[in-house]
Length: 282
Image (cartoon, rainbow, N blue to C red; front, side, top):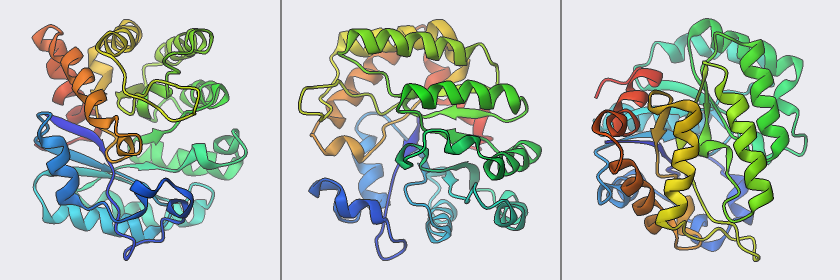
């Protein structure tokens, strides 16, 4: 089974400035061996490392890890989408590296939810599209999810990987219904795929809590109805769930929901979709 969304960071290798204001549990280094050990108990045998800092230093770090450890199936890395000249300079060399499987920016951390629609960003996305490089896309707000549809329509040759299923607001019925509708809209576009990862139940304190088995099944059923198994993949989002201590329990619930599917459906989420979308050799 492939964990399609594992974060690692070493603050000696990149700045990770966002960690200065993050919860205490996240501020220290979270290294590869820790991450692989944390998810192994849930059945994951390999992992895709996913960008967590907007520096080219972190890109180099993730690719070093991918080259050094066979358990790392690939790395989704950072390139500055707002700087198309840098993307044009760096992308050819990156696509020649076996461990490089995609690009991501911290879209959700920007004050402008329409940042991804900027003209420079669009030029960069055109380069990814031409090179066949997937874009991992973070959608937290309804506007982020609306913009996903715009991007998928305008860049029909670009594979867009919706991280964390677009952050379903589990436990908030009205907002959840809107999420269902927006994800269904995105799924009408065949170049959008999604990760069943980073699922948390909303609570009044604003800290996500573990999803129940019923909630995991509910979200998975909604995703399967619109995407089908061949456009879904499973991920842990380690170590983000350690903030509230819910990560392991949530992952248990999600993996159990996947394991309850028909064998061919479960195989797609556990391995086949990720291998196809990211071009993994595992």
